[in-house]
Length: 263
Image 1 (cartoon, one colour):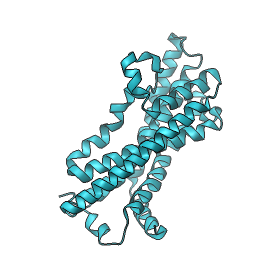
Image 2 (cartoon, helix red, strand yellow):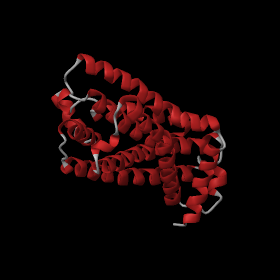
Image 3 (cartoon, one colour):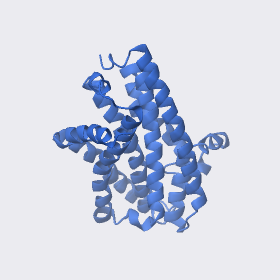
């Protein structure tokens, strides 16, 4: 693996972001609006519900964690879609780029895109609503790491679909996380789901992560078993997604569809 090639592919996308105000605005706009919207909804819940002692803190913190996950996945997908829209695959693959280098470059650049979008929203939480994610302590880093792994896993699976089925698969890039959100128990406990759905949901790392986030915020109790279970599931799914990406890539190259991608 050559790091100068990874750096070159990463810097290409960073220059695209740096040179486009609409791209920067798009990264910042949605997370910020999400936090403001959920902040006022949570304030309303606080006035009319006693389910949580700290409704604003719990819902806003879960909203930020979910948006971090969403941005991780979408950022990965967007970087890949940029190559499709600009019809740049021919230029990329006449170079000696390896698949592992493509994955590494997209993963690292997607993290930067995600942070650009999510940091302003996190900063606004405290002055607007008196909520700080830092109150979750050291486990917050592990939650973010696990969420980023899952977001990247989804990104790899969606880009595999784009390689296999072409731009027609693009809609899945926008809907993949919305499909999983009800089972992820982002804003409500696992017990809310019917029993048969709970069995399915337990196969998702999201359940353990958001259950743990609520446990920390509501009960001030940290259960590292949940965090480790989520991390183990994420590593398993991430490894599987890499294998699927390799299979999709070599299948597309064998069929000669890479050169026609975007047409």
